Length: 402
Length: 194
Image (cartoon, rainbow over all chains, first blue to last red; front, side, top):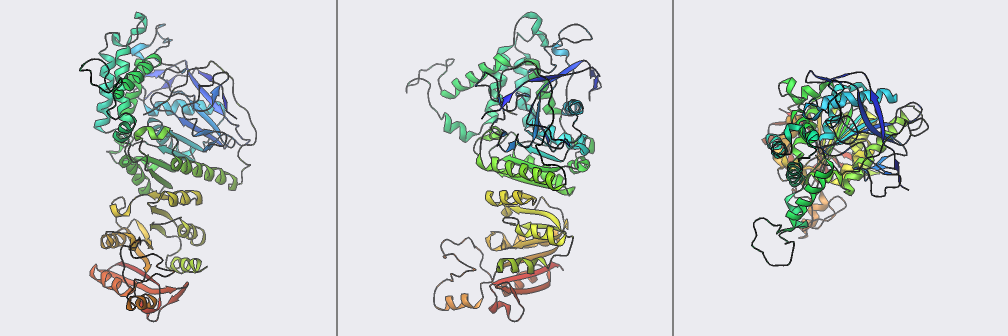
């Protein structure tokens, strides 16, 4: 019994003012919904995506068996985030390359493709855009907002930007901001793209080329940081690609890990947009809600009203447990309801996208509580009846990290 | 049944509507009880995955952490009450955690198996480590790495400048106030910084 996903699109004529001072007008957001919005519209759960994922969160597109959503293990009928009970919304962020307005589209002000001129987006801007989508869907309050990594930053930001509209925030493998090391990895990836001769200052579309070399290297370095030393060793070790003898070559693929990284890089460069990569990694770098409070995270989080579930993974060195603990402490300082699970998983940052029984069980239990809470709050049962929107074009599935 | 009475007796030491931190909160039963029956709020700290899950299922706030790494996450006197129910005997840094308990909580409440309970003494006198309902493990597989007595705790509390506000023994869920060091399997102390 698999969930059939339908990609939809919503047009916005009203300009969206951005944190940078710029604004974007006449944009559209690609989104998907699963399950049924109940009569009192109280069972909506928003899923925020990370670097290379999209609004295609769960299910498969009709007739495309291999098109599972990037969080299909977590979300669907009978899954931890149960679409039999919750109305789940996935939305593609502005600047991304999976259907929402992005750098590959035409700027209505100039009649030319945005390219490098697409406005710089922040986590806060994305949340504002998501809030407008919810307005149009008639959803005033979210039962939950959930995301991993950069998606977790959006979930956190929801509780600060729209504290009255969020009952629960589920923040997985995330952080209150990026460390210098993390920004450094992003910068290496960006330099790889920007220095690719095919990048043309971000206006490569009109040259009919794609800076694939840069994208490949960006993906390779990213991929290394999403895994753990242990899991890489277990998967590849020092295994050679061919035979058992070293071939004494400096440029050909020799080790399996090289082959794997090249494959991942090639695949990525086929579907991901270079300007999107720059925009999204920048949004990661800029996110820092404590900045306006002299670095005081507890002060920054004092406006949050939501209840929180935080999850981290012990071998995640890109978004380490230490960073999640900082969030826990800031929430404790504000006497917010918070639970925190630190899952002893070997898979590094990627663990948030994988099926670990302990992780799945905690999220399932938490969503069970959200559902029970809604029942005892005297509302009608979750998952009663209601509408859902139009429809639009499909898009390829993508796994996502960061 | 006796577990229930034990829990009720210890819960009675916690003032109503307190903000509580429960160190080694297990499946969250105590916090759940304190929230429902005494209007308390708070958090549990737990290391075991299964217990963390049980707490989330109950709707008890739980933070997964290793107590042997300390309580640096918590500010001074940030809780009305800090509980250590059957936790102290599992910790490596027992003394540090006792001081930390009194630092973070205005009141500390500790309960642990009293090694000087008479059946234990009898067993030792016969030359064998005790194996009882309260201390069900063999000497070689016990998670109770700190074996102490009611009287031992009084000495440790004094050494660390803790003022004992109340202390008694618990046996089969009943409070033992006469000769608790010999007559009770569980020692209970309520204290604050002197």
